[in-house]
Image (cartoon, rainbow, N blue to C red; front, side):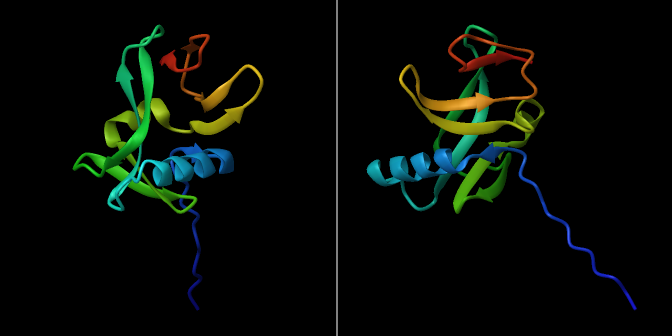
Length: 118
């Protein structure tokens, strides 16, 4: 008798329920086309060296694609080294409103939380 093992495939990033809800609202408000997904990435710049990319885009050849909370998510394969394990949340408080990035790979973050060094 053979044993079947099930493995849970973890996505390299986490979007909290609050982030998914807000991204879905933005997609509806901005009439984002069906073939677009959420792009998560990094780019050079910001006060700490890298800044986060979060927006809607089509899948590109160099992308990994996965689904979180019913949303398509795209991330360039080369960005995984900087983003593996990141949690993206939506924060709505008295002093802060917007997406927050909790990145275990960041050695330093700027005060605003939108840029980091690795």
